[in-house]
Length: 324
Image (tube, rainbow, N blue to C red):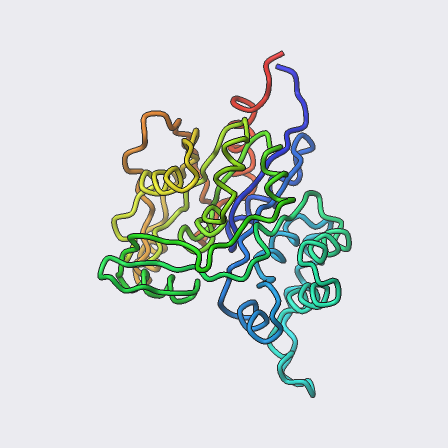
């Protein structure tokens, strides 16, 4: 086998994708690309979107920070929230990074240029791509027929026990042309981890992602979550997630990375009170290779960065590198 640098695309958002990026960025054999959701409707991001007419910056910011040369210092500064003491009260409560990215978009008139500027400022070891610059809302139809709109409402409705039957973007959002071209050149794609319906699926639902992935010659790797996400996903499994992804992108998921570490009983009980439970494996399609590893090591439901990065690297060396 002959080592070469692999051009990798990582799809998602939320808190899961930064964990993956933060571990992989230390591997000199990987050229990282984060393809990030731009449809957040809650918190500081949603407020800036509504008040300034900018794209929600939060998910893009977190991924850029994970790739920053000095991640700890960058997070300390740019994730700090401004106090509610300013004469312009609307600035209070926002993170410095969200305001900076929104200001850069406002002055450049181009969100992709703003993200590139932030990447240069932070010395990012990789590229962050907003999957689309269109204004759109995540929309879902639930088992009881209710239609919810916006990431916050979709999440709240399914967490309360209303299973999602169908999900889409309204209006349809096209992929940024530069992002579509970048996806076609990836050697492999990694999807997840992250909130399944509100962080992972939005990036895959963008028009043009399916077509770009069809031309991407390498494997598709799915990293399953550690927990279900509320009453609406009570019986949801990793196998179900794989089938949702395959239906959306129109091609097989080649490998599933699945956690085997067990939680302490006290931690299980804590998450059970939030109607969250360890994600079961379920039944996988015959063509999907299962990669199992203990990926949970801390008192919080988050993949261990180091273990996840090594698991993903072992998968990529086996499936994406040319023998030689």
